[in-house]
Length: 190
Image 1 (tube, helix red, strand yellow):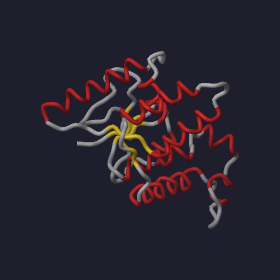
Image 2 (spheres, one colour):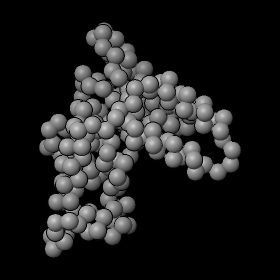
Image 3 (cartoon, one colour):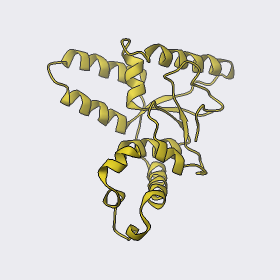
C-alpha cells in the first residue's frame, strides 16, 4: 500500500469549506479510509516541507491582517498532517532524473551544453506554458523517491510526460472530483 503526498491546493481545498472542491476532497479522504479499514492499514496523508514553504509564503504576502485565519489554517495543517515529508536522498535522485528528462526532451539540441540550466535554454514564458515549476518538480521527486502517490489538481503535463517509464513510477491522483482516490490503482497515474 502506498501513502499520499498532498500538494498545497489539495490541503487548501481540504481546509476551506468555501472552496468548490472541499466536499470532493473530504469524500476522497473518507473513501480511502473506508477502503483501508478492512485491510487494517491506515494510509498516511503527508505534506512536504516544500508545500509548508508555499503555505508560509502565501500567508506572508496576503494583503491585510489575516493573522487569526492563518493561525487556524496552520493549526489545521499540523493537526491533520502532523508528519511532514523532508527532502531526502531518494528525492534528490528522483529530482535529478526528472529534471534531466525534461532537459533532454525540451532543450533545443544546439543548446545542450554542459553548465547550462533548463531556464537558460528556453524563454521563461515557455516554461510556464510547459507547466514546469520548480516546486512541482520537488513534489514529484519526493513522490517518486518514496513510492508515494502525489495528490494534486495541477496538470504538470510536461513532468508527467517525461516521467513515463520511471521506476518507481510517478503516480498522481486528483481528489477534486469524488472517486479520484484509490489505494491500489491511482487514477490518472503517469
